[in-house]
Length: 345
Ligand SMILES: NC(=O)c1ccc[n+]([C@@H]2O[C@H](COP(=O)([O-])OP(=O)(O)OC[C@H]3O[C@@H](n4cnc5c(N)ncnc54)[C@H](O)[C@@H]3O)[C@@H](O)[C@H]2O)c1
Image 1 (cartoon, rainbow, N blue to C red):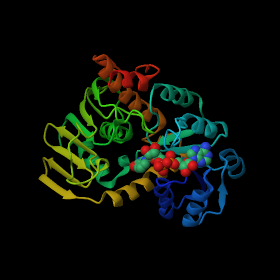
Image 2: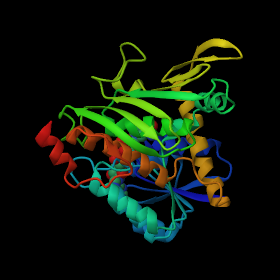
Image 3: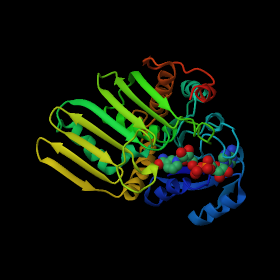
C-alpha cells in the first residue's frame, strides 16, 4: 500500500483527497498546511490524524511515497513564488513521487528553475491536468487512434479563463490527442493587462497557431475576449473544449457535452457531467502515478517534462505576441516577462 500525503488544504485539495475513497493501492495518511484552522477542518473532513504545519517535519516523519502539492504557484496575498521551492523541498527529501497542481509555472524565471530541477531530480513529478483522464476524452481519443476520423488535419481548442490558468489544461488536451508530440513553432498574440497584477499573473487573452513535430497544426484561443462560449449564462472557467478535425470526420469534447462525426456511425452527440467525469479523472491521474512508481517504463502522461514543454509553448505565445514574430520551440524565455507585458499591454 502506497503512503500518500497532501501539502495545502484549501479548496482544490478536496478533489485530491476524495479520489482516495476509490483508490485501493494508496492511502492518504498525512496532511500539512501552515494555516492550523484549515488543516484541522480538512483533517476532520477526511478523517486524517497525522497533521503538520511544517512540510519538512511531515516529510521527515511520514516519508510518503506520493506527495500532492496543492497550492497556487504564488502564495496568495504575497508575490512569493512557491512552486519551485516546494518542489525542490520534495526532491531534497527524496520523495519518490509528487503530483503538483497546474499551472506548473507563471513566467520565465520559475519555468527555468523547474526545468533545471526536472533535469537533476530523482523524484517523479506529474502535473494535475486531469482532463487527460476524463472518460469521454479517453473514448474520443480511442476513436482518433483507431482512425475513425481519418488522418488528423487540424486541432482547435479554447478556454475562457486567463491563459495562465486554463491554457495548461487546454494545451495538455491538444498534446493528449497527438501522443505528446512536441510543439516546434508558434505564432501568438496577447492582449489585456487586467490580470497581470493577480495571484497568477497573465495577459487577459491569447491566441496562437502552433506547429507540432509530427506536422499537425493547432489553433488555440484563451480568455473571455477570444475563446468561444460552450454554455450560456455561466462563468468563464466552464468553457474548456478541444476539437480534432480529420480527413473523414471530427471529435469535439466540451465542458458538458460532446459531438463527433465518424465514418462508421455518422454524426453523434450527447451531454456529460463535468463533475462526475472530473472525479473519475482524478482517480485515474493518481493511479497512473502508482503505475509509474511500480514500473519506470509506465511514464505518467502528464509528467513534468511534458508539462514544461506545454508551458514553454504558452510562454512562446506570449513572446511571439510581444515581438510580433513566430518563435521556434523550445525557446529560452526572457526574464521579466510580466513587467515586459505590463509595459507593452
Ligand atoms: N486541476 C484543476 O482542475 C484545478 C481546479 C481548481 C484549482 N486548481 C489549481 O489548484 C491550485 C491550488 O488551489 P487552492 O485555491 O486550493 O490553493 P491555495 O494556493 O489558495 O491554497 C494553498 C494552501 O496551501 C497552504 N500552503 C502554502 N504553502 C505552504 C507551505 N510552505 N507550508 C504549509 N502550507 C502551505 C496555504 O496555507 C493554503 O491553505 C491552483 O494553482 C489552481 O490553479 C486546479
